[in-house]
Image 1: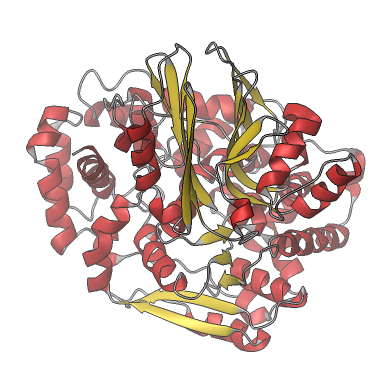
Image 2: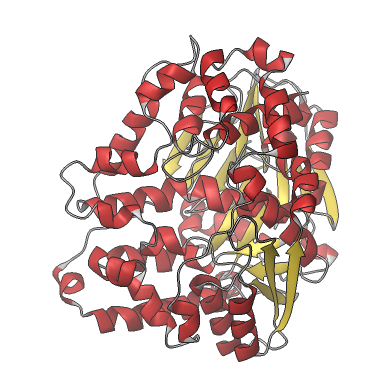
Length: 590
């Protein structure tokens, strides 16, 4: 897990070494263990290293193989790198390091662009060919690792974080109207290729971008998720699916134990993280460190699930740490968490995850985490509502979207409104080939889009703010493909995630499974009060906000008049969404 950056020119202009160095420095937290630059006349690459696999200097990046004439910068982890190494050695390749980075170079040389289909892991990379001047950028199937792009006159920059591109300079920071529409509609999610800034784009998950020396580009999607099933899949019993799922989970967790440092686990006390802990111990992990974060109880709302995490920790004999965060500490550190966001994220989990990551990083460099299970296995409340739906687009948007286009018309000033970009996007994604059942359509959209730019991005940003690598077994692409074949009725059984819960019974205590799902909002963010409310009010009334001219004053005044009254269908604060956007813009653009 690291930070990568690069600058590529097509017009003969030399690389701006200082700009490249600034990008590298801005990503220091992602890779505190080392750094490097590799610069030629027309392209340059930077890397910040977090030592997880092959702790020696032989695995330093940027890595260049003079025999092959190929170089690479790589962020992530390839869990099957040992198997690939053996296959490549049988072809005659020889290795000078023992980690996964060099495997990418040899695999690309051996198999061309299709090498990426052989990788099991999370990754974003740039590979360059010295002879041809070609550069290949790639991002993993489920977008676990980020890749931001910024065009230059006669060139292109890329980085693992959006603020790194801003540090390089020369970015068009005008607001992107499409990105703004998505942000305000999709619970702060901005799907690729857009971001909130007109001058920054994201490489889509499961995508390669090949860049020739003359600037010609070709984008190729190397992975898509299909929910089509054959007769055998439909006929297979619940019990058979449960056993297949359990086998798939065991494989996914075991893969993510590949490291040259100990692997810990984030243990919330819910089914998903508890199952991961159980499977890690089952796989032979000894002296497992587990971590749980909790907050104050406020207004009758419980702030932690310590007792459930304790049950699991005691059952499996882990070295368990409770991390209690007072509300005052949450609010005091909130600006830091906003500073760690590559894009504004409204989830209350961000600040909690930020402080959890800080505490965990004192003892662990790698953890497994339970993100993704709700999207992959049907854990959210809107999936049952879509069963048998005659209008999946309308029903999904009513359950998920923060605003419809009419509400957007009341909020946005001209010329920011434009067309119903989000409605068109959701309709296109839901009705695309490969999923015909409305529940499957929603699961696919959430797994391949909403998950990527909300929980997954949140985990990457907050953990990497402290040089902590988080691995997500539920997003193992083979497991996700298996889950897509399981009929929706098995996922929705038992109030949601039925098939996953029944698989979990073979591993973890039932009292962790048979209880209400927990969610711990930060009260000051959910209801907007005190210091946070004043920060939002100041941001939205600031000179910078007035000059941006995004929002209609009457709409903002209505929200400010009663901050707790205006909630989204997902129970988020509409005012916090606007305030966070302005706070993020002021943090990163000034």
